[in-house]
Image 1 (cartoon, rainbow, N blue to C red):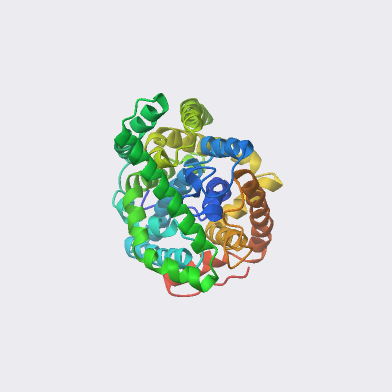
Image 2 (image 1 turned 120 degrees about the horizontal axis):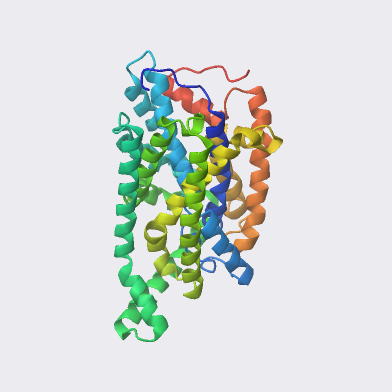
Length: 410
């Protein structure tokens, strides 16, 4: 397909991206409200009742890893879409792509430093070249390598977490040795202390918060990239495979889409619910959740990511004829602007330079702010695009990439 013209916009892809940029906030809200450790447990950064625990479990089953998965799959698809646009009648696609990713890293760095420490843009910019090295592979090869690498990575993290899982089970059964209990106690205390320290930073005035964050911003992106390598690159490859197979542009028959959707739900939901039961029955063990997120939850994340993507593509023709569908499409077309606007709104609510609610809002109440931000994104994206050609940050990114400013107004 490298020699054929690529479409300027794919409506279904924008629709799925719109759902992803909204849905990812359902999980990121815990980080805005409680810092990086917020998603590890409903009670780690704020008081939690039964309703908060229930909402945490629902978030885990339906959103955790799945929205990030959709976002990353779509980024992989956009990498290939960009290359096909550039290489249609030109041979400088890789050079432009690397410049594009370089500016994305700069935007992400500014986001990480000045707004929110949970940025994902730098991660994408750093790891995308690894995925692009495989851009000439067939869709089948991309998919097979992606699934195999994803499984190996998450299997490795599951094995790495085995000592922690075993210690938790032994403690619950009353058979743990004193050394194991002491190690668990020490780990829990360290996580709790780290969460309190980060909350203290978030509550500081803006200049003090940026100064405190500057040191970690120098190395944190590379540490996150190291821990995310085996998830992010395979998901990008999978997005490239789906795009190349015509998944987003009507290239799959409905029967195949339904098989992927129902198969993903049949595999992913039971696995996610089983893990949610384990998490709840073990008292929401923050010390184990990193290994759950990066390891044991991998199969359910992947299965449900694909199921959601297939369901949204199936629904796209009908959904795009509705008001909510066109608003979601517009939100997806401006995903970068909306991603950064989400950070601006949520940091104003929770950080010290704004309302300063960090550490005071439980998982259930966070959903009030999530829904409020969703309404803002859905309300402004369509009207903006009726007047302007692109989102404001997309326009900036494009101008920096091509070294000339294109008309913004229609």
